[in-house]
Length: 101
Image (cartoon, rainbow, N blue to C red):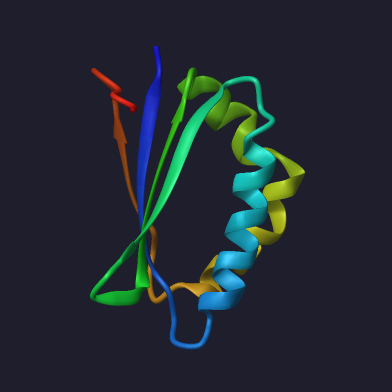
């Protein structure tokens, strides 16, 4: 069953470029994973340091057991304490419907 992760980030002042560079590298690499379905990164129009990411995968166990440990995520995970004001806000959802044009 597919699973969607909705993740909120509040980036520290002056860290936006590094945050995006590291996250874009992870997103680019994720695209090649067999269990990856899609991801969308949003920025708050009222706060350019506030981001929302939602990513959908085919298998939660694969995400937790395999994907989070991928080497392309190491630098991203290591940098998070320096990049973010606080912890990421993560919630897990089950998709019911996807519409695309």
